[in-house]
Length: 420
Image 1 (cartoon, rainbow, N blue to C red):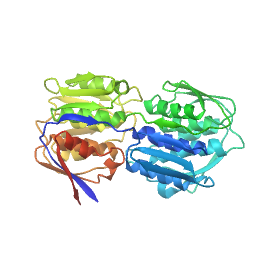
Image 2 (cartoon, rainbow, N blue to C red):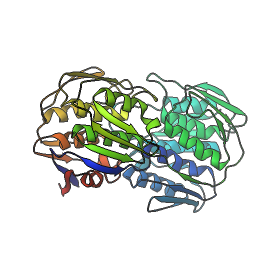
Image 3 (cartoon, rainbow, N blue to C red):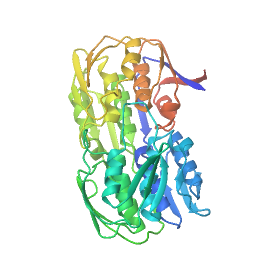
Image 4 (cartoon, rainbow, N blue to C red):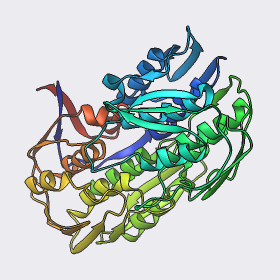
């Protein structure tokens, strides 16, 4: 098992390239289950989660080849309708095979999901939406068992306690593609990754309108065909690199970044003192003068993303003054607080709020990653800290960031891997 070692204090400068979106590619790979015909997906990042999803596709009767950012999925044999616990339990996003299997074959057996420990993330909205389409669903021995003699289009409200759900919207939208008649999903997730999946399905022959808005309309079809598609850039990776530029008082030109997908992040980073220059395919970030404290509340898109909460907290640890960060998506998503405090940060948690009192500087320490975005948060802290920071359990980082240490090293960071 590897760990990351960082010698902090280096100002990042240069150009970095953002990879394809993790949160976009995983449901799109799942959607290839909806046809026997070949599908080619480009711009696919080399991530642990992608490798896991390819294994799941192979276990379900597909052949899935991955070469230099391109995945080709073809039918390898008879379809398998059970997604096994051993694979699904390692990655929550793999639960989105439920919708495609149920929609196409009218039955599916999928293990309840696993993934990062960032708080309770129930699947009630997934099941609510699929039941609205006519599915009969039971939970048996840790598996969701879904059946339907036929699926029928329906109007449904898919909002939850903490707002809309991206993965539930994915699952229900894919199942509804094969439902007879019209389906309307109100309070659908609006994230760019939802729109990317919808565009992929439309290329396959689906009839979808309103994707990227809170109301999605789907007219059922009988069959889908293969297609080619390129994944959108990863907005969370882009946001993480923007924070890396600021926490090191650096100057980064972030290529393959779409600023319309980052409105809330850009707004808050500019408020904190960033100079941000936007172009059609890149974002240049540098510190205007000195960092200023900010208050951040995570919300469903287009609000500030929960997946950037840990990174902005890392940035605020060395910002003079008091910042308050409120988590309204996953109120328990604060596993990184204790590790940042080990590095000299002053952070106090009060329910869904983290109160950050900025310090003059962080100190390198041995820390442990608890989840994907906490890993990125600790990398940022290590880049800014005085001395050496050692980060264990970086397999979390590899789930969602493609070659992050290589990209940072190319911008001047002193960062390397060691065996534990």
